[in-house]
Amino acid sequence: MENVYRGKDVDLTKFPVPKWHPLDGGRYIGTGSFDITRDPDDGWVNLGTYRVMLHDRNSVGYYISPGKHGRMHRQKYFERGERCPVAMVFGSDPLQFLASCTEIPFGVSEYEWVGAVRGTAVEVIEGPVTGLPIPADAEIVIEGYASDDDMRMEGPFGEWTGYYASSSRKEPVLHVEALYHRNDPILVGAPPAQPPDEVARYRAVLRSALLRDELDRFGVPDVAGVWQHEVGGARMFTVVSIKQRYPGHARQVLHLASQSRSAAYAGRYTIVVDEDIDPSNLEEVMWAVSSRSDPATSIDIVQRAWSTPLDPRITPDQKAAGDYSSSRALIDACRPWEWRDKFPPVNVPPREDRAAARKRWAHLLEG
Ligand SMILES: Cc1cc2nc3c(=O)[nH]c(=O)nc-3n(C[C@H](O)[C@H](O)[C@H](O)COP(=O)(O)O)c2cc1C
Ligand SMILES: [Mn+2]
Image (tube, rainbow, N blue to C red):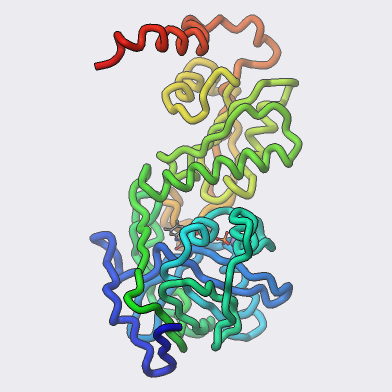
């Protein structure tokens, strides 16, 4: 609250807002940012990173994909004929940003998740306009309202898939009633780009951990490892390794992983491999797919799964009809359970032996 502007004094054009990609339809003030909303029924508070485009001095456009928490909140207000209150934070504690762009479950506030990770509660102030809780140490914050009868073109924007796939459409405008910032505030940017980019790299770590946790909570035994690959933007290419324990174990993992909270949105390929394969090593994974799967019997297809206008492979006709679903390929690249003992042996020495040899002859490998 070092600098406070209300009503006509709000001027967002004073910030050096970048145009991040050559074909972006505007300047995006919100990339390394998050939107704060409250569920009008249950009162819980969500933080979600959704891109924010600068329209003019005191209005911004923001895009939220169907199924995201901020969109469900907004929809609830609109269905009641009310405006949706929103606070947007441009520049925050990095852990708050990390939480706001991660698949934390519906009904759980990212604030609580941050507090749990840190071990201390997040200090907030009550937003003077909306009453929403605002991080006390934020750099730049705006408060305002969106309504469903006020939409303006938003996009195109360079997205995490490496394309401008959602093009431009009419999206709700946030009318900014208040602007607060520190002296010399830092406007944080985190523009997505063709993966594997920085955004995909940090998200792969957390998403893989979340999926691992979900599979454990689903009661799936003997998960050896999980990786949501950077090349797929930590969403479109998911690999799980298991120690097979019973017939159907591999398919169970494929279907659960592909529809889990942390991997369902905008997925594409889910692969299960045996525990001798490192799920984070693309070459090992694709060797297992190439050598242990049988295309005719090893691949299940799921139709009409949760996707997004950002999906570059949804046809123009489908998008025009409002159908943002896409299919999933679930690839079983494990040795088939029934004859796993008769599967030809692997012809390289065990991993431990290779590691021991590398250690012993390290002086020859250097330089
Ligand atoms: C830099 C960046 C930009 C993002 N932009 C958007 C966006 O414009 N719209 C969207 O729906 N999700 C976007 N996301 C993904 C969401 O932040 C992510 O799905 C998050 O889990 C959403 O919060 P929620 O689960 O509370 O809905 C972005 C993520 C990052 C890291
Ligand atoms: Mn959420």
